Length: 224
Image (spheres, rainbow, N blue to C red):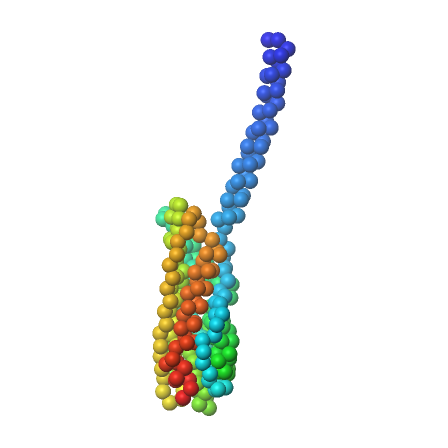
């Protein structure tokens, strides 16, 4: 073997560890980035966005508001993938608190003065029709269903969101009950992310709360 051949062999042997090092480095970096992109946090943010408050004027009437979540399972998101255990997670803030604060803000814009009831936020029967004190309207919001179901496939995913709430109002003389429902469907490529889940859920929640605020029967009943 001549000197030139030895130099080439030495150069090849010297480059091999460096190439292996960079190959392992970039492989590890790719795995870390992929893991970060696919990570789903255990909580997400519920934030309904009612831009334009439906038109109504209650002339400073008063009402007592209570929101109760009667769902047996309190998670809001269920991610299912074939051959894998379902992933469940909930909202950072309790959904009944979000609904209560949102409706209070919007009803006060309609000149309905809200007194929040002292609620334990636990499951109660929706047959409770106790008369309000001092003829104040009693509004009871009952959350019957609030769920986003994600079906994850290899290269895409599908999202279905369904929210059902019941509104029971007692004005001291009679009781009115109305049920509102909102559903939403969407799909996307690769893996679902928290932004897509939040968007779908908040769109459906905004829709159902807007229905409540704009409902003519509720408006007429509260004005009695």
